[in-house]
Length: 111
Image (cartoon, rainbow, N blue to C red; front, side):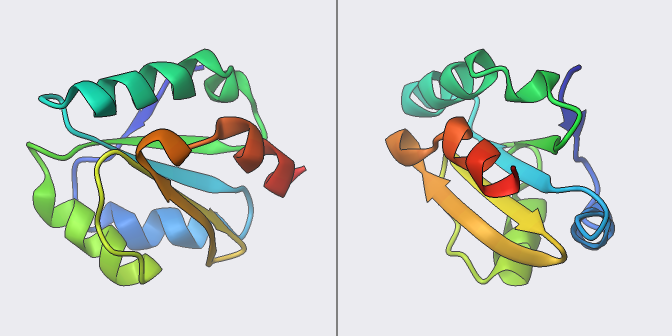
């Protein structure tokens, strides 16, 4: 599998609504930040993108800051970069940033 790309603010609510059927993860990434790149590589290396039990959404923060703000509004989680936010059953149930992002923890939550 590969990343789903989010590029429209209107997608945010649809993705959250989709979490009622299947868990959804937003991954906010800054392409200019080495810490963000490290977190992204670690997340991708976990194998989470190969799981059919969760959809992972990649957000390029430099191109789509307004989308990040919408995710922050919907999740009630202050924007950070990098950041992973998990929705299950329409509710935010995991949010971590920087080195605390842990794909294994996400997989445990949705198991």
